[in-house]
Amino acid sequence: MFPINVVGRDRTIPKAAVVLIAINLLVFLWELSVDAKGDGFLKAALQNYGLEVCKIGEQSLITTGLDSFRSLFLHASAAHVLGNMWFLFLFGGLVERYLGSVKFVLAYLGFGVVATMAHVAFGNTVCTVTDTGVVIGASGAIAGVMGGFLVLKPRAKVRAMLGFFRPFVWTIKLPAVVFLGYWLLMDVMQHIGWIGVETDVAHWAHIGGFVAGAAAMFAAGLFKPMPKPDPLEHLAE
Image 1 (cartoon, helix red, strand yellow):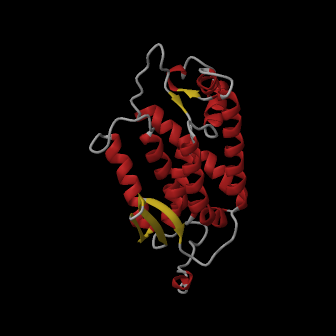
Image 2 (cartoon, rainbow, N blue to C red):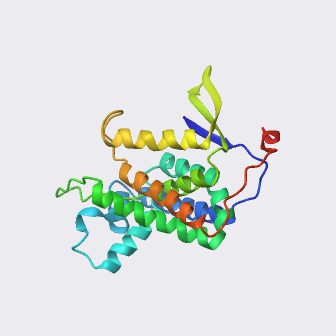
């Protein structure tokens, strides 16, 4: 189930989210240039600039912090970065408008930090001589944005696509609480092995980021009113 758009009349461009998207895409273009140098170059670069879980404690806190920060802008494939950026574009606008651009960026980075900490603490990384548990990707930070969106506008309609090839393609509209709840549930079930196969996805980073985003919006709601439902939202459908 893949989101196509969020139904609504607001077409404001989320400036900070667009800047984050541009940075991620530029970094991925750099990754492609490194990969073009030959086999092994990209893997070495990701190990050098990404966060290696198994080396935490061996390095200084400054080095670990820098690796964690850089990891938020590195991705393993085109599908990885494009999927992440699409989710950020869809769900980041509302959160950015609520917080403001500067606070949104700070919150985004904060969600990424919490997501990384959750993966380090609960991700069950197996350390070997050849695998030091490199963590890369913006998924945890974006999961935080999604958790924040859920709190801010749980009844917003998300138009999602089922299937990818005609004639086996359908679109449905679901409340955000259903779509995002389903997304989180799938992550939990994949982590505990109830569905799917073993992958390199850092499910605990997603879960930790999502919970952090939801908690942050609950806290912000104590000081600033939540967005009110739009009674004319159906006109945008």
